[in-house]
Image (cartoon, rainbow over the protein chains, first blue to last red):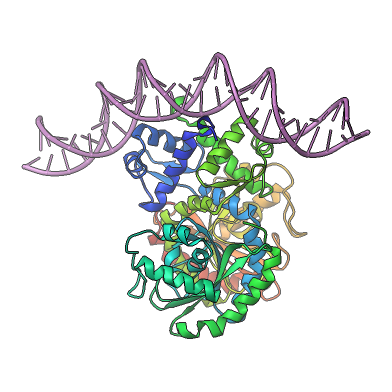
Length: 253
Length: 253
DNA sequence: GGAACTTTGTGCGATATATGAACAAAAGTC
DNA sequence: GACTTTTGTTCATATATCGCACAAAGTTCC
């Protein structure tokens, strides 16, 4: 791609939209400039443009995003076949085992939920399509990282001690890498309250017809109901059956 | 706003993203140019920029959106207080009546789901935050349209015969306007299979502390279980109780 | 009340982007 | 295989955007 085929204004505007996700819902021009590293004049032009287009509201002091922003994500969810293909299987699995089931894909070091069938809510976290979790400490994340070349997975996990969400969270990158090897060998990942106390989950990879892992499928359950050690015997068959059925239906992406 | 405070490139890039929602998941440069009305050269630059930023993939022929796009919608859902405030009430209502409950806001002539508590799925349509439905034939849409000045509502509904999703859909704008008057007087809207055969729903407005309607709350139920005529007696008290409790908690937006 | 500070709005030259026509390359047609 | 049609790419130029520097308007704190 040539230098001149890049539209700076578009890149900056998207940075501005994402800035709202990281902090407060109401941001001033200066707030946005600080969060994005853009010049104030540029941040202002981006914000005024978003407001003009109806993606943001402006009360003269603060900007807020409007629901119109959801059109953008909706463009992905409605245009991408994966969510539609997996939904019936998700419903079936969730119904059969009486727990929430989800499908996610990898985006950088985070997993992104693209479809979900939820049962009675037991977690404090409210997950839905578009929600993001750190890949390193989520069952679907482990499965997706395990499918990458080792160097790539290590790069995504990063050097530092990882953020501990609970006392059970593995914070040592090497420990996570070792776990990835186990996951790769076993074909599934179990998480025991590493993300939230009281929550266990188990995930399997979803491969397309050519065998490439394109997503992950999981079931989450309260630790009180199903201890981590029993997750596999309880849920693995249903997950693997769904993965097997989905395999010929999936293309890449 | 001055003319020069508008970033054309940003507006065009957003048009391009939305173009994917309207049609196929895989679009060529020319496809995008046609759908957006942009010059092919400009459409190409937008697409290459999106690809460079990781929002799109390019295989040399077709572009597809990547899950990174969901960051944009997520910025809204995580930054806006409304979804977080209503979720617990939604869960409670849904649990109490054993049916799915949702909250949506108006965006143009469509309603946008911003939060949802779903029970066992009974509909063919899979709704989630970000999903859109035509306001004119959805219970929450009727409630939100009824809260607008009459001229504004009429403008949004438009002149033409409305699209009929089922044989029950009201397609005459005047019939819808008359229904809005009834909704305004009654304080709730009931839909009897206008959007999908076999599905009834009832919605109430959610007003903020100053009395301005900022969203709508609904319950959907299979027509076989609960005929439209009995929706109000069955579900209205729970909806109104939730709306009353939410009122002091809501600010505008 | 006013000095010190922060935030916001604006004019301008340098620089980057949009445009549409022209060319190149496929793809489809007969 | 030569024709037409569609699609992708390049280029020069007219135009719009960028970011700086300054001015104006709000805040904060004595």
